[in-house]
Amino acid sequence: MHTKRIIPCLDVKNGRVVKGTNFVELKDAGDPVALAHQYDVEKADELVFLDITASVEQRKSVLDVINRTAGEVFMPLTVGGGISTVADVRNALNAGADKTSLNTAAVKDPSILAEGAKLFGSQCMVLAVDAKRCGENKWEVYINGGRTPTGKDVVEWIQQAVRLGAGEILLTSMDADGTKNGYDIPLTRAVAEAVSVPVIASGGAGALEHFYDVLTLGKADAVLAASVFHYKEFTIRQVKEYLRSKGVEVRI
Amino acid sequence: MNKQIVIIDYGSGNLHSVSKAVTAIGADPLVTSDPQKIAAASKIILPGVGAFGDCMHNLQSYHLEEVIVQALQAGKPFLGICLGLQLLFEGSEETPGVAGLGFFKGNITKIVTPYKIPHMGWNKLELRAASPLLSQVSGEYVYFVHSYHAQPLDKGIVTAVCDYGQEVVASVGRDNVQAVQFHPEKSSSVGLKILQAFKEWQP
Image (cartoon, rainbow over all chains, first blue to last red; front, side, top):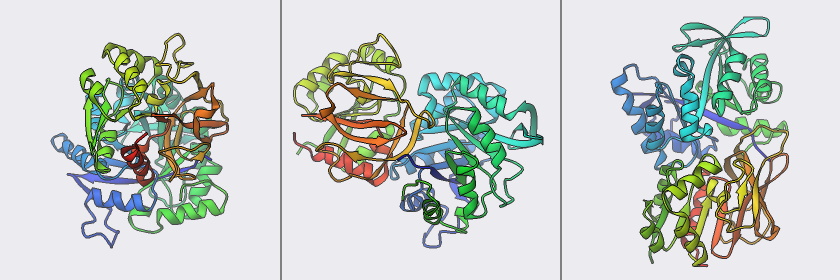
């Protein structure tokens, strides 16, 4: 049976993983390869590397991280942050990434989704969306790291992006993110029911039942979390064992 | 023992992860689109990502169709991965009218399921027949990304399936030719075991 995916997100800055400092057993908790190994042992289903490097010149460092990780850890790797051209997508794939996630660049020029899907396959083109509630069951798309509202409706934008070639949606609720009060169920469900491609829910994880809720009530196909794993509030194995005990199929 | 494994490069998809996984199991990957090197290979992997028609078109524009068919018939150990499995069949609903390599009889059809398409993620292998590559990984999870799957005329070539609302063909094989719909190079330690078995396999 197909399984729901649990995906840790690692923030990469200048070639180092930041915030990922709570694997006490690691000699160097900022080393992306060591962290990726640890997550592999814990049966993470994929890894997302989010490049939070501020300057464009330093962007190459995330490719080096991917390259080193891909040589040792054999699971799907996604690169997000700073991917703004088809050349960026190609460079990430050549470094060993399997997928790239696009956010601001896709809003500014949606044709990149079509072009990337044609060249590399839609499974490489993940659309990341930062969504903020703006009314009853209505959400607005934000770009530039959540700083800039676009006036676009989240569900309409995602439907358009899937028609163009986005093969998967990484959906972050700005309202839920950081609250630890749970994923945004209505948002996730609205998107998951509106498109045929898989939806990864992000933002708000704080308790084990939050994962269960968004994968069942929210109809998400996968969940992404950063801080709860980084700070070892629970391990991936704990999340998976909880989900399995509630009847959700996971890879353990 | 010759540890070299030729990985056919025909401009379809990401060969880096396959190459890196082959390195990780202690073999020597040679990524090439040179027909002579493919003809001289002792073991061959045919990877592939994307659409059936594009991949078949690329194989032809690289002039590789003939050398691949010869390798299949010459009894060389051969592993198709993902699109590399699908290309071994006669054709695909994804690109009607484009002929595949036709080594296996049957066609590739769209997965019919109440679940999301593509079938993306980890699913459990159920073995259906003896397989030189999968005997150690029965019941293990492997990583899939695909929207179409094989419908072999001869069900006897199906070595493993998985359940995705409908039964999905996960692997096929006959004699020297084995092929998997999932990605062993992305299936963690289970996937490396499969590639290791390919490395050691002497059909």
